[in-house]
Amino acid sequence: MFIDVRRNFFIQDAMRECSKKKFDPKKVIKVTYVGEEAVDYGGLRREFWQLLVQKGCQHYCVGGDSGVTFIQNTAALQKFELKFLGMYTAMSIIQGGIGFPVLHPGVYSYIWSGVYVGAVICDDGIMQSSFRELVKKLRKCEDDTSVREVFSETEHLDILCETGYRKPINCLTIGDVSEIVEIIKSHCIKVSIPEINQFAEGLASLGVLDLIKEYPDIMKDFFVDNQRRLTAAIFREIFQVKYCNKDSPRRQTEEATYIMFVDFIEKCEEKEICANVSDISSGVEKSQREYVTLEDILLFCTGTTKVPPDGFYTKPTICFSDDLLATASTCDLILRIPTAFYDNSEKFEEMFVWSLKGHIGFGRV
Image: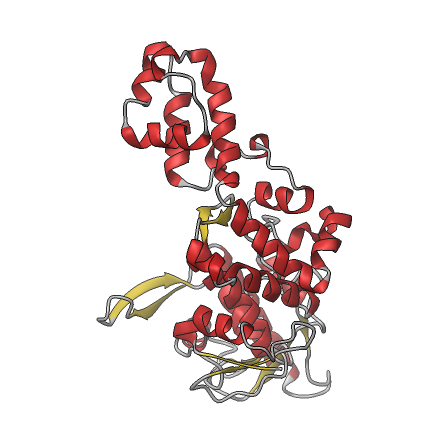
């Protein structure tokens, strides 16, 4: 099943495709990025699942490092966009993608159990910033008067009323703080229950919701960040290295090049490698400095910044070339490293940074 999307209108195009009568979530997708020359043999699809998470969060979610929940979005509900997002997520899981691994544990808990419990959310993990700020102020209260002063602010009083809490403000005491905080934590999930339910409806399209309910711990990695950060050591475990024959005169050069690469990824892990990149978000092109990360390298090689919970369909491979830039096949999961700079670490780093940051889009890597 073919899907055509524009990178700058990814969500709009993805939702348009999903709303077509011919759309069948049981079929494997083949992705075309409009304006780019590439044929999808798996790499473009893998990047599609990556962009689905990134762009889906930007359009439909709110939260922070501890995870996200869905924002109240009546327009999206009416267009069944959260259902479509759930369908795509189910397809991602079935087709070897990463799922939607950004949800707050409390949201995932509700999806599989049907119960929303504030106790599973720490204070800093409250997704809505206004709710989080209110809880912080309540935690600092030392007496009855300071509690009542918190709710003298209209914004905080509106949140309390929104939760359904009805005790008069002038009767609040320091002893009420714990109860109010737990109600606010539960409410931060409850406010988006319609959106979560529609997302779960989409998950049900391929039986993924049933799997979640039956095996919640196993399926959790597809929906909640496991906090296992990519390191140079993990990166080396992911990839296998393909050298030429031991008797070949090129063998020592390839081995030296690999040592250069190991040093490079270790520096990336320690945030010692930077690149100048162009930012055109304001409409005016500006140059800014960015760290080169291990996720950048993994994306360059595989089309995704995260290893799918089920792993890649084949082990990614590092091999060597006579080119002057690093290249990659995201479909075959191959990274080709030039041997031209095996004895010059500075030029090797410049080459790799340019390979990663100087070329965006398939057909140009």
